[in-house]
Amino acid sequence: MSDEQPVGELTLRTMAMPADTNAAGDIFGGWVLSQMDLAGGIAAGQRAASRVVTIAVDKMKFIRPVHVGDVLCIYSRIGRIGTSSMEVELEAWALRQRFGVREKVTHATFTMVAVDEHGKPQAVPKTAPAAAAG
Image (cartoon, rainbow, N blue to C red; front, side, top):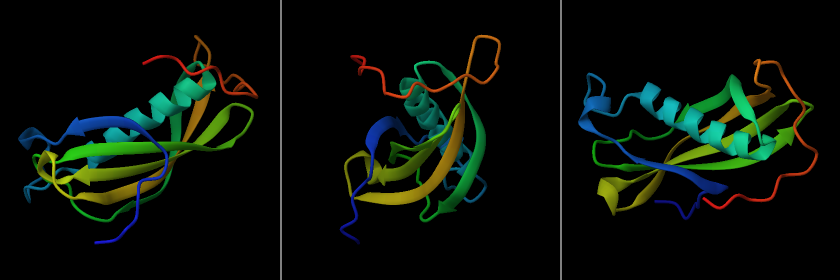
C-alpha cells in the first residue's frame, strides 16, 4: 500500500454494480473508461463554460481491477489549454467495498474540445469562469 494521494478535484463518485462486470467478474474496463469520460466532460465543460466533446484518450493505464461494491472516485485536473482544446488529467480511485482502503485503479489524459451549439469548435476562455455552486 502506497502513501500516494489523489491529484485533482473529486469530480464524480459512483458505485460499481454487478451489471457492470466482465466475464471474469471484475468491473468492465469500458465502464471505468465511460465514467472517466463523464468526469472529464464535467471538468472541461465547467472550465470552458460550454459544451465539450472528447477527441482523444491518451496514456490510459489500468493498474488494479475495480470490484462490485467499490465506490469509483474520479479526480480531474485541467492541464494544457489550447485555443479550443483542453487536456484533462484524470485519476480513478476505488474505495473498496464502499468504506475500505482507497486504491488508485487507473489514470489517463483526455483531450476535450469546446464546441458551440452547432458542434463547431469554439475558443476556451482565457480565464476560468467563477465557480458555480453545485
